[in-house]
Length: 237
Image 1 (spheres, rainbow, N blue to C red):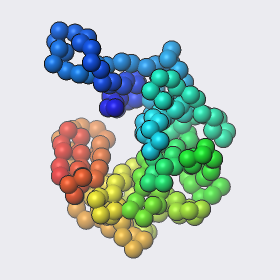
Image 2: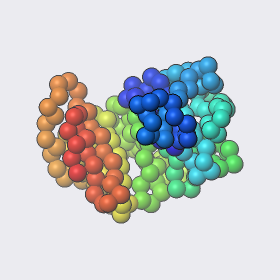
Image 3: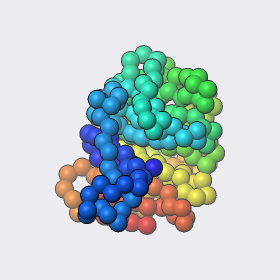
Image 4: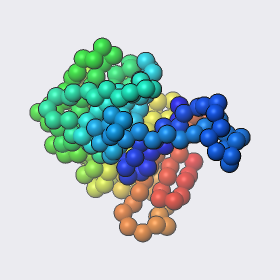
């Protein structure tokens, strides 16, 4: 399965492999596009994030709820408190097959393979703010970054928040990714760096974007080793 989803998460589309020819122009392609929206079972048409767990289920986080997709139908999952989720693609399937989902200013939910739920709320040390991304490091720690720049690590039942005193440049959303060796990398405030020995280490000042407005930084690990860094319309490796 391959997925198409816009950056603004307005519509959810799934590319399905088929043997049928749906249009003369697509005669040489085995793919076609089908769109699922609220009429097909989504809580609403605003998709905030998508991931797949090892059991094959596809999980779709919408702004008003979480659903599980089995290839035929959606099943809505009730979460503690209200069902509003963060808009920043803050959903992750970790190496243990657990699902992590960020609520809209309501903390982070961990769902195990049997459906058991653990709720990490602001009472456990998470900022009472909206999460942007969730990432797993090479040691199984779960990292949550927030729109306003905060970064939190969840390891077991322990929650720790990292700040400028721990080496973060601060001021903007921090994007996180681990490379093939498990090393955690970050971009924030125009800097690229890594995390080691409980500190963030800014390494390179990123080049200025050629686009106007707020900086748009994204980072991802490469299967071949190293990193991919996206700055607006520019891609670096």
